Image (tube, rainbow, N blue to C red; front, side, top):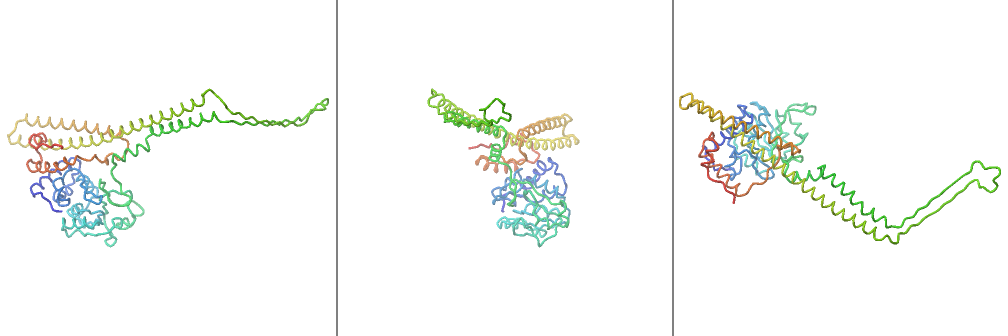
Length: 432
């Protein structure tokens, strides 16, 4: 996948990715940071998306697949604890970015991919003798390359397939959990048991099926519906029957005609002929109550759906605010360090350093407040995992222009430039 970024711009964007996305989220392993700073991520995305390759988001690759966000990949590599010389089986190589990172960490990689065009792009983007490319079903792995020290699945699955487990070097894999990693991504693997981020449509469907308020309203409406046949029953003919049996165990001596046993039976048929319209009006009233109940049920559904949409969007909004505040704190930390260094050489005064410290403290306070708001939004939205919500689709024109703006910002401004200064000098972004 060819790119349109020059080397200087790409290097600056990689540095900004490390400072604003990885280090601020505790991805600080020196080997992982060095690997992600050396591998050209833009070479593994479609050429049209090269300018946004280092943004904190997954990038669609086609076939329902996606390249993980940098933070997701970084955390996955830290958890994998790759050591030089280890053999790693990578399931879902896609365009080869994760395979290139594993090779940069010193691993011998067996990369499996089932889509021919993605595998061709991976081979074109990564020419590393430490990577062996295998084309085949993802769930089958690479039996001919077994055993391996690590099994890394660049996607999301619920359970490790037995065919993959058997390829681990630990022969006790079937008896206990071994060292295999699963990367959570919005563009999950095309395995049969893939897990995907919850969309707004999925959230509404779950609320419609499981919300207790809606369940109670539906049960009340079903009880309301039964009032119509109950009222109609009062105008139907009724039949009654009775049977009485008596047996005298002791018969008085002076009773000559009293029988020892008596059996009597009777029946009654009642046919309503005229009730002054009471039955008709009662049925009509029951039908009206059913219609009113249906309207109430629709109103309840609309209210629940409105609450779900609000809670869903609150979580996505607060997540974006937290990420923005995290990046702001990272920038201000860099500025504080720069101010301290300039103070040491006499270029700034202690007042300038104190102002930088105050700005950083204010930004950290804003971050704590944003995190508290996110926790509250997550509590309101009780489905899990909250972190896997899929955001709403972006405006198409904004999406096209944002790539150009990102490229301009990355080219004109150094990574540590404060955001207010970028806002004043960057080109305006309008939605048309």
